[in-house]
Image (cartoon, rainbow, N blue to C red; front, side, top):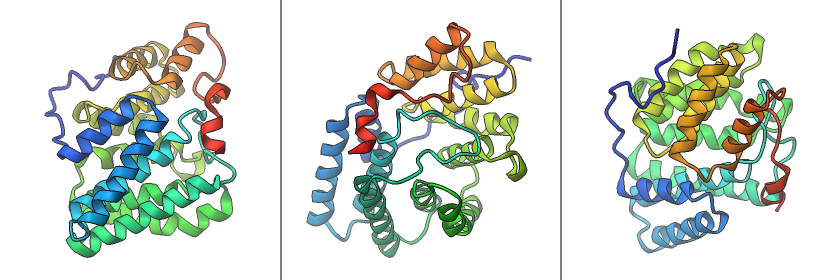
Length: 257
């Protein structure tokens, strides 16, 4: 049965704050310098207005996106961390992001999105079994609390979908359930192609190749600058093995910096 690809399911787009919208549009450029400049400007905004929870929240979100950009060339593998060691710059960004979350929570209190940002920053620290054991309990607790506060938050749906997609078999790997979460998120997050990319991977793992290709096409339409999606499309069209799992060596320098 064909899946609902997300863009046409009738869900209302998620209303981003003005700052989050600017960040989303900056990320879509797929430009390292633009994202770095966004982080610098937002850090200045926090210095100038340190009592604004919204400014600190946006800084935390920006650090999360910056850390993700460092691994945007990495292949997607079930049951494996993205990196086996954190580059020092990325480790510093994650710590700065966690500090920004703490400042926002001190001013505003906890909400689902701040809890989700904290959980994802902690997840970015995982490089193997030892680090996973160290933070997994905290991540689970943050996610549980976020679900209580706002179970339908679309970015939380991405978090849930990714957990079910990348979990090892013995820890709940479930690509079909993952795809449902990711398509719900994709319907609401119109400025983010990544839920569609992950939903495409879930379809591929389910053996539904045509659905995977259609979802990748939607993802590429949302962000033509995403080089990883373009590479996966080429691999899929060529019938290559493991189209989602292989890195893009051409942009690996970014993560190594």
